[in-house]
Length: 204
Length: 204
Image 1 (cartoon, helix red, strand yellow):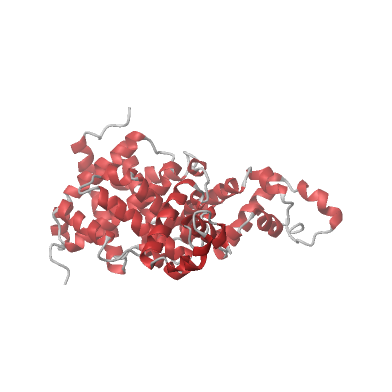
Image 2: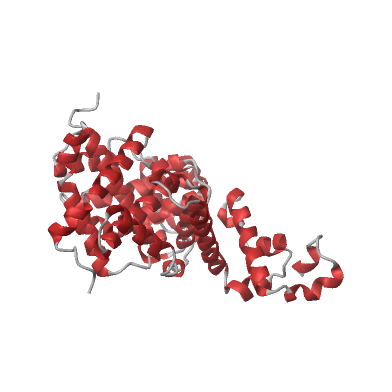
């Protein structure tokens, strides 16, 4: 695996670089991209730079991910996976302050500003959003409809906070803690709200 | 150099273009930038292009706004102003679907990805966030502390939704309406939550 990493790879090997198995190439491209995104402005994380620092030919990116946004989508998935692998259980603070989740959110927002199709970044339905929904259902003790709505709200808060917290005038530690208190307390009332709205039935 | 390229300005006026009053230049640069941002990928809305299409010398941008992110900050303020000027009263749907607010949110998120300092985009404390906070206080009938926390939460939801709604697997019309229902219903319970938390006092 380390063997082809060197950008000074022998010229005679050039043609064989494409022989790196697809799974290895993919993993290497994702890992390299994540390290670059952590330190560089996103616009400097180019196809050329990623492939060069991965020790792969330029075409490896499009061959494995179709496009740079396609690779960024895979990166977004990997960042969520690193978060969920790290925590068997987590609280709001863990999610709100996790560097992997924040990087994921900022990368997607920036990519959309660059003109990428937002639907490209839809998670695997079996993954993040489903986990989040089931988690919210369990925590709040509610059925699917309320669990889904609340998970969406929580996710929007998380995504909004990751990018915009420092742009809010009112941002300070006390307000931040108050927001978490309010969200946690409101979560406790979802079960009775669910009954009041007649949502305490599984979605047909 | 760029100044002579503009067909709408007399050549003899070239040297005098910098005499355009600062207020007029600022307004023109903001208006031009907004129209460009509506149709172009953000990275194509450059200093050169903005000043050229505004009929102003290249230096007019830095003279009036310090930098391109500084101009984007003024644009973000203007987009919020257009929204608040349009509505004397508004509901969640008005805010969630307003093109000016969505453009503002996406522009700020993209700028942060480009490396801009997020705190550059802090609103005037007397403006947007203050209006939002007082509005939430009034709607929910709560005091300042709860009004502040709830306004932050609502703003994060709005900001998260503006950028990420199309990236959520669970995104559909029913879930969207459910989220609005849940937020509206929860708002009604803030007053009793405020009392329960002992927050029904003005902030000292």
